[in-house]
Length: 315
Ligand SMILES: [Zn+2]
Image (cartoon, rainbow, N blue to C red; front, side):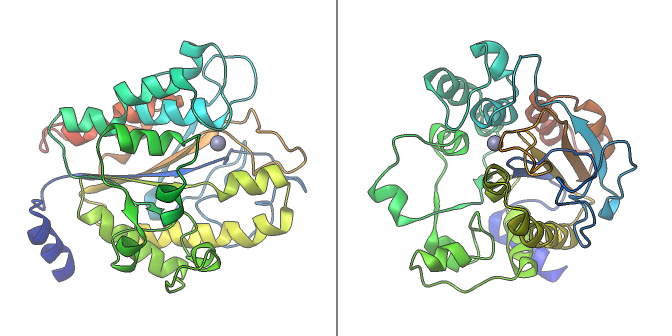
């Protein structure tokens, strides 16, 4: 408790202020049981192991809102349009008439640059916002031609990019939260257990009103149909999530986990799935928020509403 209070004093955030963590996982759907699904028979994967037509057992009193990622548009949901929708509250596939793979095109960038959750919160006076992920020197030296929806949203809102020095100082997390990939790239950083990474991310959440974290190895494993990697990686990701939850004050903090489309829950095909995705809410206003989420387009409005509502109104 002492640490949380010092954090608050250091950053000027009142303890009564609410906070939200949006924990985005690329390519995680609600699947059926069977040998195609790496969650089937996997222990230690709560809260991620959720199956169709079965009650979900979610630790820390989480509430599941099965969420439509298809958004009324034919075809398989894709990353660029799904992430744009999550990050803006705008039904992006409907506007561009299709699901868009990979990285945002100009039309999606325009939506992000005008409507991102970062901008919506800033426009309502909430300035204490961060994208908790870490960017490496390589990104700045050789900027990729195509950037992700999250990177576009961070840039458009004028947020600072976290770099490896921030990670070393406990102010950022790598997308591979154990840091093993960073070490392979030659960075001198310590390996983090999922528990330590969860502690770090929770600390970041405590010192901001809104924090976004993005994890996308799940989608890569799904496309590679790599069952062994899924069975190794999913329990680690689950441990990380539980550690974050254990370290948050859920009386004033909401954690929202969601995904842009299914993939890893069905390794029988390389493609994304048409399955619903799990949106899970924990903590402050968890029930009210979950009750408002039916599609990916409902997530940003729910976050903006809970962070801007009068603290005593409880909405
Ligand atoms: Zn995706």
